[in-house]
Length: 402
Image 1 (tube, one colour):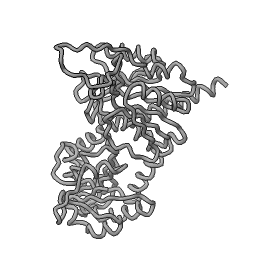
Image 2 (cartoon, rainbow, N blue to C red):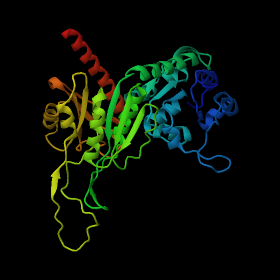
Image 3 (spheres, one colour):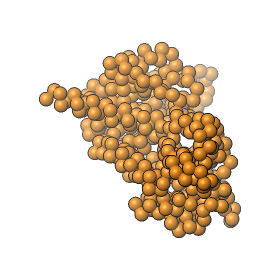
Image 4 (spheres, helix red, strand yellow):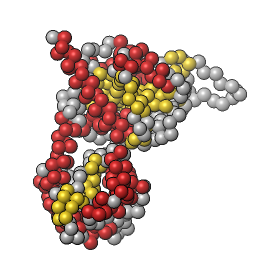
């Protein structure tokens, strides 16, 4: 929970109490000005955790904003002052609270609090809309008496309302896919040339691990098959991680689990070819030219698609550099998928290694949906929502057949 410097900060003591009482683990971060409105000691006692407000502690130890951002399932900024909202909207990172916000992969809620004229100002309203477009969740301000003595909009939502919003969010997230089994692949595959060298690609696994987390927090049991070099944190009670090296390794694991899978998401960048023969010893550099004979790797998605069951949802990814739409539509049909997620390397901010992605979704029946540039975690949440819709459609279709 992040608290910025406004008079409404005092209300957050009650919010922290409500969250802890419900069993939540609460880490409080204060902006430097917030310490003037509410006592860190009070919040520490209520949260049962040390309250943080600076990058460095008195003993010169560092508060790692990246770890703070990644270890949470949700960040709530309340109150979100005009100053903090402006920094969030325009990339100004000048304190621990803001550094944590900009490092976050989890959903963000923010509860604006300010005087009515500030709240109504076009710039503030535009900043709020901008944050919502980026995927942040607005907890609307209420109407009432303000610290200035005036009455109007701008009063921070009451702690009970913020608590109910948080509780509803986790209830919806944790039950949407309860009892469903999801198989996700992530990262590259490495195809060995010799004991030292390999054929691979630049996939980081960021997209696949984000997808696994989104399904896990929606209540699904997730088997995450990771290629080599995937370094993202994949710890979650609902995620079982299996590490593999080659395309054949990945296929072997997928074959073991596909029979019990409700949703398959093939986001891994599987190498298309592998050396026909792997050298048992390191190949020494002696000739000007080294010729490798390559053979085609198994097409994992096509293989699994041939035995796809009626109740299963298959989602594939297509990374293209030309004829993007026609290639994606062809892949949708050929691999027996319900949805193809098209990446284009021509789009800035998309592709390997980035924290953002820009995709177009292609469904059966030539329906498509273009999504704007967004974080990979936000895109993962979008794919979970589309999966729920596809499952619902499948259920309705079955009932009609009866």
